[in-house]
Image 1 (tube, rainbow, N blue to C red):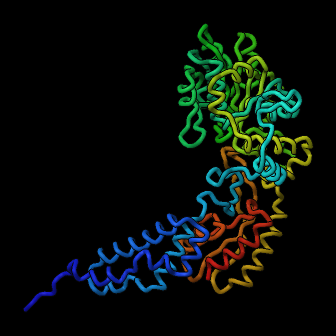
Image 2 (image 1 turned 30 degrees about the vertical axis):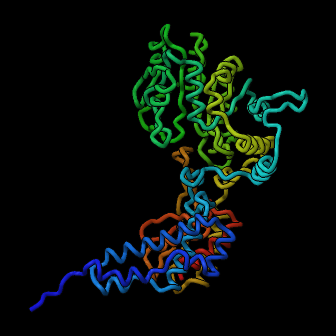
Image 3 (image 1 turned 180 degrees about the vertical axis):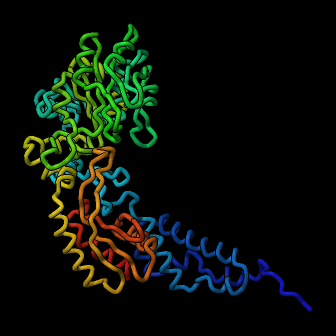
Length: 478
């Protein structure tokens, strides 16, 4: 009796020969339309990728039935090629709808910019500007002047400098003021600032020598005093903006550290982290030291981020006494860390909002989201629930739940913002499948998954995005 033999390579040849050639696609009217919009290299590359996927599927098939089931019909292949062309041409960096409720979501780009900042960036980006040209003298100018004056006026600092991010700001300040010398810092402040970048590592690369004092939970002024010697160049304080140590703790205040530095002729640098210009405590938010309050202590140099509580573009802002800022500005590394004209435009226009502190909480998107009252969110959530229940009752359960919105981005670590969320429990598909469909929609919707439900927190969804969110939900649940 003859045994059934396995599928041989020659058995697969008819299926491989059935795949159309690249030229056949290129002659088709629908592909011709794509050739008018995209380069031939992009279109041909997309065709070849789809054909290779089909070839590999046929070659890897275990039997004739499986080989025959692989779609090689012309219309199916044409649709796959068109989808591949569209996917290839789509930008990699895309706008998403942030329905997670995490205000400063690092993975989603942190702070969205104010409308006036977007308008100003477009104006500057669309033509030439006086980036490094002094309009008064007609000679070469400095790009840093565009934001230095306004930073000095808003904060009261003697001098200012802006670089690409806060890690760069800390690195540049340490390298300028303490290269080859010792920097004293509390052991409890040796933080990791995200992306595995840690204060000790930044300090080591800067050329400064780390001297740890105190313990993880308690550091006293005499710990700093005992560590000061002729090799000491700087006292460093790192504001633990992304975590808190609670319980049996002790920490030296910035004011006392400044007094110690002045008594010993040593500058004090504070990494303020998030950097906020507005006291948010009247809105029920945990008290964070503002930039202005830090400078009032007489601290010599402070650094903080531009894209966190400030609500601007990614930047590292350095403020402080002119004699120390002059040293930092003269550092050759300053050029390697400098910011471009678009960041300058976004930062300057964001800073201009702070001319009126009372309006900043409303006009800066990040501050507006953080201070948004739960009653307003509840009204929006109820409106969306009614629409979803009317349109999608057969596809999912729609409920409103009380939840907490994290601030995120290493800011206000203990501050939870009471919120209301839409909780979706799909009836005809899995939660994982619905999350994936939303993530792959246009624009992508990024939501939270919790206890078998999709949670949509409107705190981080602009009202102008609600229509898109609803439409994407309809399509994802179809």
